[in-house]
Amino acid sequence: MDQIDFLELHPGAAPAKGVTAWLVDALRAAIGDGRLAAGARLPATRALAGDLGLSRGVVVEAYQRLTDEGLLSGRTGAGTVVTGLAAQPQTQSRPREPSAMRLPLPPSPGVDLDLSPGVPDLSAFPRAAWLRAERAVLATATNADLGYGDPRGNPRLRGELAGWLARTRGVQTGPDDLIVVSGVAQALALLAQTLRTRGGTEVAVEDPGSRGTRDELAHWGLRPVPVPVDDEGLRVDRLAATGLETVLLTPAHQFPTGVVLSPARRRALLARPGLIIEDDYDAEHRYDRAPVAALQASAPDRVAYTGSVSKSLAPGMRLGWLIAPRARHADLVTAKHASDLGNPALPQLIFAHLLAGGDYERHLRTVRRRQVRRRDALLHGLREHVPHARVEGVAAGLHLLITLPGPTDDTELARRLEEDGVRVHPLSWHRLLDGPPGLVLGYAALPPDRLLEAARRMGRVLGAQRTR
Image 1: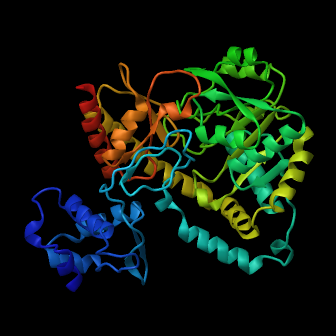
Image 2 (image 1 turned 90 degrees about the vertical axis):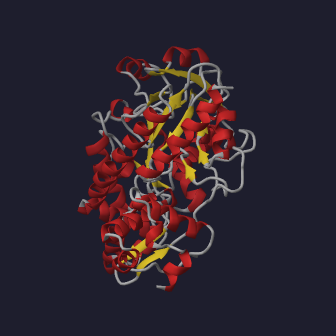
Image 3 (image 1 turned 90 degrees about the horizontal axis):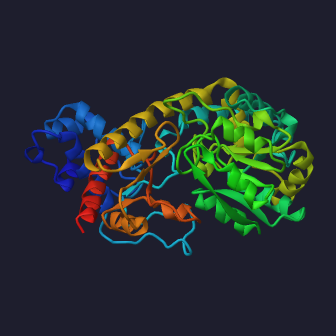
């Protein structure tokens, strides 16, 4: 066992308790400092267990935790291999100032616990199901399927998506009304371009609300105008005061507060004229309450509805959908054609196959169970280590919001946390108006034990902050 000798993993070094965490930390450190390079093959679980005098279950669990973190990959016949480098908190770094940053932030060498919101559990990507679907698609795809095709998207995918969105979100649509896009970002880009063509210069947005969304709109020439959010969602009375007819919001699970647009606010919003852009960014992730129907179901002639697989499969798939009022549909298709002639053919066909065969639904059920465990772990850690924090937005989604009593500079707090290896978003990044400080924490990308460690570090930093 030369590799075990190299890592200096000796049976006598294992603690009496917490042996799994000890093994995980040792392997993670070896990956981080380069002793185990990408592509290196780890010993078989049975062999390593025997060499260290441990139960095989301990080694299996350790390998699984590191696989969940994306540092290892296990495949039948290929063993367990290292897939990437672990970030070690050796180099201090500072969160970007809002004027200089571009979301999502890239990895930092000083961060080993990244709680950035909006990052899904990439280790849960259904590789086996995707591979089976890809083989089936390649066996049956026609020459026409591989051509340029319809800029709205492949008809099979549009048909499957229309049915799935009707069943799960109550959306009123048909295949001909749906445009396949490369994520919500492109949907917003197409909407912004067509609004500009019609003379639009501003759009109302939630405050607090997604900084990335504001940046996208501003890039395409639309000035975001903030409208406050409270515990019932967007303040429709304040929206009316702006005089704007176009508004973008996240009614089913507001980002970042997690509140749901109340029935009274929904009615008031729909009673107003103009275009409503509904970003249903994490509709698949519901845990403690029944899903709220999409706003589009109540006013398909007024609402442009958009979503994607970025939070359910992977953001790198660049696959989403846009359903707009029919009066705007032709302009959006023209803009989509001019942008890229349509999305890549094979991912569309594969996703259609997953939808048709039920694999996508099975994947979502699996992911929800994993996310509930991760959310609960972070909540437990926050209650233990940050008991004075108020936690919001826990019933759905992939993130939660904490607010703290007393005056706090949340940007400075995020900087101190990043110095301790924990990345979070200060709530002020997602504000244009004045408001209470807070921290936005994503929990989907880390396994429970790492989330508990993040909460422990947060308690240490926030505790020091309170004593200042």
